[in-house]
Length: 458
Image 1 (spheres, rainbow, N blue to C red):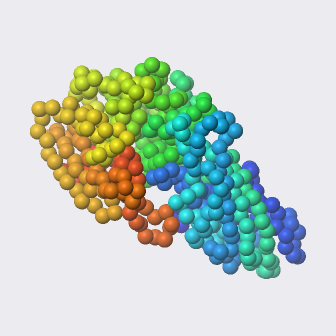
Image 2 (cartoon, one colour):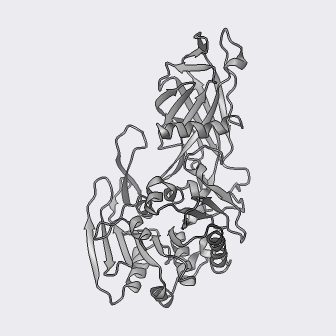
Image 3 (tube, rainbow, N blue to C red):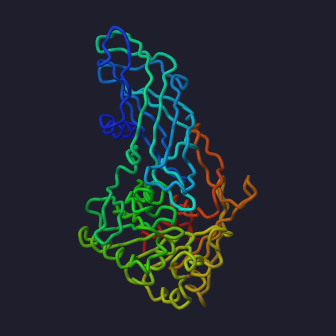
């Protein structure tokens, strides 16, 4: 119930701004007395943010009753912002009907819960290779009357049709609303979670698909494309890390330009600004894919900056081809002299960046000549994995097993409940998306310690 109330409160902040229904017609009250408003609410899933709920507010003078999943029809249209070039192919735009899977009435408000398998707030550009926020237009049609009771006990019927038009970054989300969008002083913007008096900082470097596009400065794709930003703000993460500020950068273009565009120095300087302002004593870092490359480069350049690193499918092998520099063996070996403890996570046959040339290569260099302990874990509805680690526990590598997917390609699997029926089912994702497991605090070591607990203990 606390979550529902929080969602209602957050959505209410947006209702008066631009998400307003056309007035309904009813007797005997006037249209002004019964002008419902509505807001779109989002949820950041493993596959990105979706519009997961619509809240219709009939006003403080009324109580709504008799609403079912068939009462409303929801039609969604997603389009790209006007600045997107016409030659960019887009995935995730177009029109579709959204399925209302359940409804709930709380006083004057009606909550329409939507199937979360569709309704993304981002589209993916090709060949731009970027996730970008979309412009949303939602049409909500009332099919049957809703019983309204006013403050005097009079029963009224409301019948209306209305449209909600939502600017691309104003979907209410109880997780993303905890972050502040910051314009970086050194040219790298970031999302920031202020954890009050906490002396711990978690830094997140996103994958290549979440970098800025066409200098839009959106500073939001890295938070909406997956749970790489919001996962660190969850109650579980905050409890394990004893309270932590979160700093989620967005690359001005791509992290592969880290050296030629001075991104390493810029990120370091902006981190140190937060360290000074918040009196930070402990810094943890995590990154995925291109962000795993950036994380590796940061450790090479600043060996004493981070206490621990959780690196997911680091894209070391493709760096040269994408404007970066694949680290040499000597550069990777130099990390052994840093104080940073490292846990690497990847699918055992990642086909986007080669596992043997990325996480396995880095782990082998870091642990050369040291004995290793291997532990295998079997799981239900989620990929099995094997973890290797050194005796000291400073270096660990977790490789997740893949399965043959329904489309005939290698996949990783995790449990999801996108249809909100209360039953979690096996869901297949690209075998590159191994960051999902770290963001769920899933991998453990031989002692049964989870990756977050291990990092927090460094």
